[in-house]
Length: 176
Image (cartoon, rainbow, N blue to C red; front, side):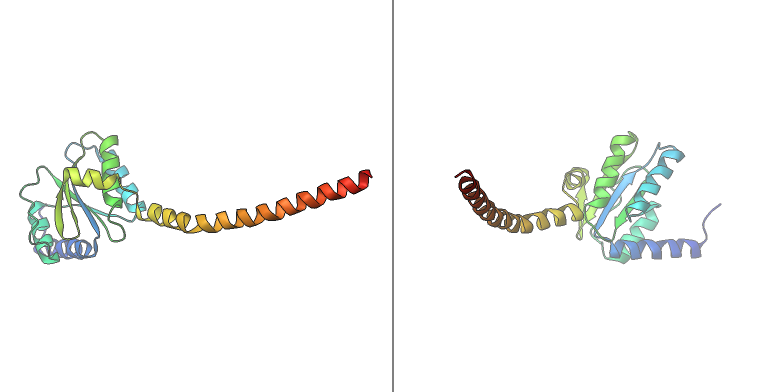
């Protein structure tokens, strides 16, 4: 059954809002995936906080134009198009979709949007190799605490040395 104009307009409005809020956007071709595989992928994407939708090409064109991505052309993209959008992280959609391409052979990365620029499949795969936002924050915290930890260890070392000298002196006096 064909979608009514109102349904299409609400779909485009939802897609446009998600595209505007998206920091990382990935386009994928899901042709040939089994329903079970697609459901598993949707479940994992939802857990990661990623908006995922299968979109008709014409509705995607309108959504991209309305969201301000006028330079991005979906005419180059082949197959049935799905969109994965993350409002929080630039890397998460790329990591997740590329991870699923390894699990499901028929899923293909078509490209994506980073900032306001279109990136091709190779750049999306390279982006997927980068650490995520949480990993980077963990590395920053680790590098900030490393000097403090070293200082604490040095100060404890001096105290340990003093205690060892005092213990040795006490042992020497008790043997006399």
